[in-house]
Length: 98
Image 1: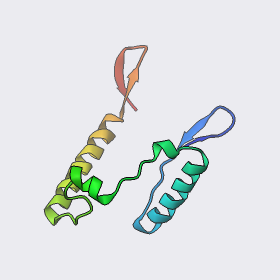
Image 2: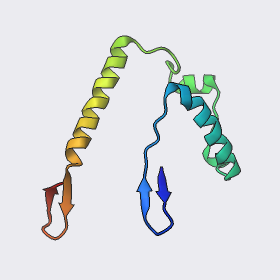
Image 3: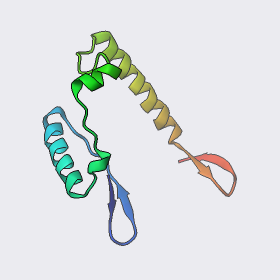
Image 4: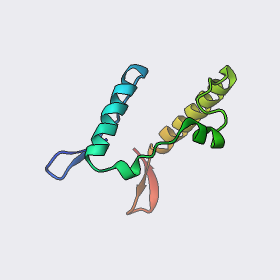
């Protein structure tokens, strides 16, 4: 989420949702999207349509699939964290560390 502070400065904030808060957030977001006229950006598909493309949609993951996903995500986060420590220095045309 990006918040404009009014003085030209912006602040980027993350939204963290738990299992308990997701349904409420989703409901409120969809209502706000409709009020803002974003309807054309929101698509609704039946479960049968989704299952044509993704046969295992909404099925429980195996423990092995869950562990594989978590390991992949951890790897991506670690890589991104390490890379974010480097900043491009335009003047020197090289990377520098934060």
